Length: 499
Ligand code: HEM
Ligand SMILES: *[C@@H]1O[C@H](CO)[C@@H](O)[C@H](O)[C@H]1NC(C)=O
Ligand SMILES: *[C@@H]1O[C@H](CO)[C@@H](O)[C@H](O)[C@H]1NC(C)=O
Ligand SMILES: *[C@@H]1O[C@H](CO)[C@@H](O)[C@H](O)[C@H]1NC(C)=O
Image (cartoon, rainbow, N blue to C red; front, side, top):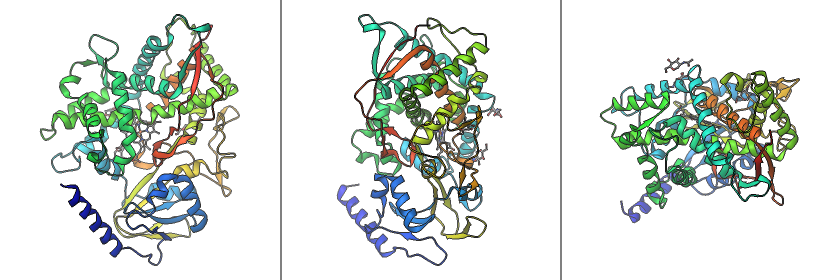
C-alpha cells in the first residue's frame, strides 16, 4: 500500500471517529475523551501512566472510562473491587493479548484461526510444564547453566586488576547472565559445547527489539519501525527447526511445543520459529529487568544484603554444605523455598518496578458488579483494566511506598499477608504477574531463577555501588506492559569473596 493511500485511510478513520464520538450514557462511569479525536488521552497516558491515573482518580473517583488510542478503557482503581473483576467469567474475556496482539508483535499467524484447530488449547496445556513437579527439572537445569555462565565470565581471575575489584554496569551484567542462562535452560545447548556462539549478538538484537516492543504492542505496523523487521527476522531465524534439531538438553516445555507445532502442516518453519522466539521474549523480557532491580536494591542497602546473605548461607549449612568460593554450588528447589527474606526482597523489588495492565474485554453489554452496593454499565467491546502499580504505590497500603524495605513482606520471621485499605483487608495486594486465568504461567520459574542468580551473586562476591551516581530511576516507556527498565545503567564493583 502506498504511504499516500495509508494517510488517506488514516484521516478517514479519524473522521469516522469524530462523527461517531461516544457520549456517556446513564449508569456508565465518567467518560474522559481528550480533545484529539481517536488518539484521545493516549499521549498523556504513555508519558506517565501512574501519574495520569492518580490525577483522574482524584477528579472522577475509582471508576472511569478513558479513550486511549481508539479504545475505551474503563479503569477500576479501588483494589477492594479487584476480586469482583478477577472472578468475572463469561462476560469478560481475558485473552485479547495472546489471541491478537502477541501474533502481530512476534510475527506468527493468529492461533485461534480455523487453520489451527486445537492449537490454542494445546499451547495452554504446555504451560503446565513450567509448574508443579515439572518445575524441578527446569530449576536444576537453570542452576547448572547459571553456574557455567558465572564461572566462565565472572569467577575467573583476570590479571592486572587492582585487589581483585572489577567494575561493571549492573543492568548489562544482569541481562547478559540471565539472558544466556535462561536461553540454555529453555532451548538447550549445542551438542558439543556448554554454550552457543553468537549469544552476545543475539542479546543485542533482542534488546533492540525490546525497545520497539511498546510500539509493536500498540499495533504500529512493523515496517514503519526502521530496522525492526530485519532484527525480528534475525531473532526468529535463530529458532528454525533445522537449527534447533542440533541442540541437546532442551527443556521438556520447548520439546513438547516443538512436537506440537510439527503436527500442523499449516504452520511454516518460520511460524514455528516465531513461536519459540515469543517464548524467549516472555521468559527474559521481564525476568532480566526484575533481576536488575532486586540486585540494585540489595546492593544499595548493605544491611539488607547482609541479612539475605546470612539466610542463604544458613540454608547451605543446614544442607551440610560448606561454601567455598573456589567450588561450584547448587541450590535444590526445596532450599530455594526456604529463603523467605530473599523472597520478600524480590517481591519488594517487583512492587516497585512492575507496571503491567490486566485487561479483560466485555463480550456483551452488561452491568459490572463492583461491590455490595454498586455496579456500572459496560458496553460490548470495551476494555476493563486493572492497573496494579497504583495499588503497589498507594501510601495507605504501603507506608512510604517509594522506599525499598527488603522485609516489607515479612512479619515475626514469617511471610506477611495482611495489607489493608480503608480498614478492610485486601485479597490482592501484589500483582506483578497478572491475575485470574491470564496469570503468568512462568511465575514460579521466574522467582526461582531470580533467587538462584542472587544466591550465587551474594555468595561469591563482595558488591559495592560506585560513588558519585544518582539513584536509579524507572524509564516509563514500558508502563502498562511489564517490569520497567532503569532509565540509565548503574556502575558497580565486585570481587570474589574471601571464603
Ligand atoms: C519477573 C518475571 C515475569 C513477570 C513480571 C511476568 C509477567 C507476566 C504477566 C503480567 C503476564 C500476563 C499477561 C496478561 O495478562 O495477558 C505474563 C504472561 C506470560 N508469561 Fe510471564 N512474567 C515473568 C516471567 C516469565 C517467565 C520466566 C516465563 C517463561 C518461562 C513467562 C512466560 C509467560 C507466558 C508464556 C505468558 C503468556 C500466557 C498466556 O498466553 O496465557 N513469564 N507474564
Ligand atoms: C506436568 O506436566 C504434565 C504435562 O503437561 C501435566 O500433565 C502435569 O499435570 C504437570 N504436573 C504438575 C504437577 O503440574
Ligand atoms: C511473594 O509473592 C508471591 C506472589 O507474587 C507469593 O506467592 C509469595 O508468597 C510472596 N512471598 C513473600 C515472602 O512475600
Ligand atoms: C488455560 O488453562 C487454565 C487452567 O490450566 C484455565 O484456567 C484457562 O482458562 C485456560 N485458558 C484457555 C484459553 O483455554
